[in-house]
Length: 313
Image 1 (cartoon, rainbow, N blue to C red):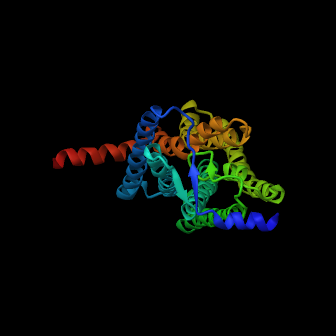
Image 2 (image 1 turned 60 degrees about the vertical axis):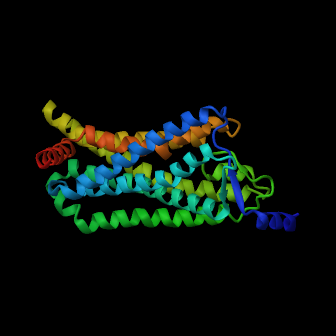
Image 3 (image 1 turned 90 degrees about the vertical axis):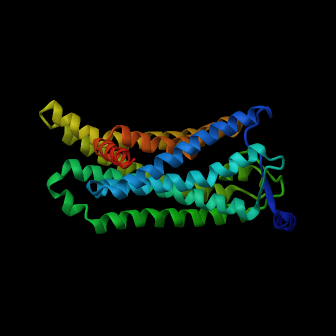
């Protein structure tokens, strides 16, 4: 039995991304929807990175993290969206084995990195509000670089482990992945390997990734709320909370979508696909909007750039 599974696994050269099970005439509508959202992802995140790099006033730890967040959102949405849009027009909807491995690896790397980066941003807001006088000392350029590098390192280690575990499974049940990208749960469904150890290790990896980041975020905000409530003036409390509201909004959207998707039972694959849109495309689209609409510095920097372009024209 094991030899047959290994043999069948070695014969797999490509997979079929089933995508959304809708009528063919709706594929055009889905393509246009994906194209619109992806265009907004590109415009928003490239624009955010450009604003941060060109405005000297945004040379602070918070915007250093925000620039990296925009880069991560841009990359992992680009790993998913173009292939999904091509498949709306393709009859075969195939993806090579190597392409599936690459997509899985890159998406896992950047989505995990984003989780750790959001925890680092929560810590940054904690220092800014609870220890403002020591902020410039504690949040040094070296520490910020280390936090970002550590986020990428954790993402890379997690991705290597998850990818190697997933693609050493035997795929003899089917080549059809019931999703619009290569994800762990749909790949498990078409595997004929014993998934007991795989599921236990995956659960362990998710636990050591999600729990520490959520704990850091929750503890940071507990201290932030406690500090803000001690501020006597209403205006002071409002200003303090406004510096955190954007980050809190981003965290809520990302983790809300992730939890909803992974808590969706396997018997509802279409609902799982819709939920996964929340963090593959919707979150990367909303993040620049959340930070730009609620951030005076970003809006001011954008206004100056537009005025400069208008003057030059």
